[in-house]
Length: 199
Image (spheres, rainbow, N blue to C red):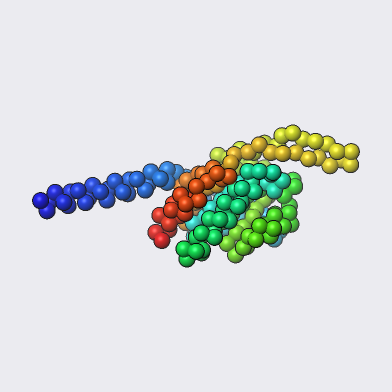
């Protein structure tokens, strides 16, 4: 009987571990290549250096986006607030703009300040177009400018079709899971963060 209980316990632990690992289906190393980016304070920062040592939640946005990106950013903000209520304050939040032509550092900073984003835990980044698009490929994120309008004063307005994405990255800089940014189940993300961080 005792032997049978031990076997059942072992099987239960194995299945629990398996189910947790299945909840985090990815294990992609993001540290093999370095990218020089510019943050909201016009400082040069390095990816993946800005995420290493912390669990990171990374969103892919552009500030002129009328729908998906504000929702993605807000969901990241709500995640941070829920984590803080649980006493978890060491998770990093990174928002990468794939529209460097318009999203200059001061634009990113204002975008964040309007949303009461705390720069202690957040970094908003952009960079040269070729660098940004290479980094997007690492995350399997697509972004394409569409519907350009040219005004008489020479100004160009355009929207972007892009992947709706929030990514969860572990402390070692490994991509562990992707979520639909604008419609994410925040509780699911929080549980995944707790599992990764063993909170």
